[in-house]
Length: 235
Image (cartoon, rainbow, N blue to C red; front, side, top):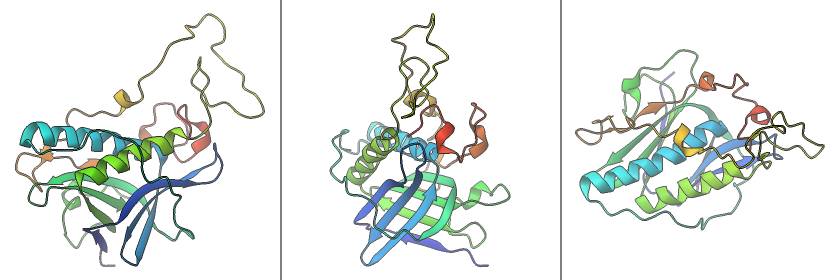
């Protein structure tokens, strides 16, 4: 089947959102342009990675090119996803880049495949490859997307201050309630900052390439990456 590439060059809205109760949520990305609304299903970990690396990309663009980008700010769009949600595909891999000519951030979402994809298809219009959604955003829109995504991820069940496991309404047995430092905090963002994320962004700008894949099997905790209920940073 011929590969389908859905391209949005001037979207009115691109947001992350969820359906379901905390501890049992399904995550989606949704883009609106004109009369078209397109939704893809995505894992919580992927949303967090994308939001984190978008911020890193914007900082690097400003540092390397002198392009003015907005600072981190408050979330203005807190509206829910449009219903009903008709899922185009489940996201397997993602690409991230900077279009210097259009001064736009490019986010690419590729459908999950049974076999590893050729990295050359990311941010490329080749006919061979998984179905793709490609979104062009202004730096302002990218900051807004990242800020909202972080809030969406963090809006789930509160975490135990000791073991960092999600607290259930019915109670919580803490494995670290005896002898552990109670004010210890872990920096979530440091887990996902990849200093090499911009090492090969040459498909859009010579010397730059922020394409990256997300491996659902990389969860070091050993939990099912598709089970939102079992993750330490559960939302």
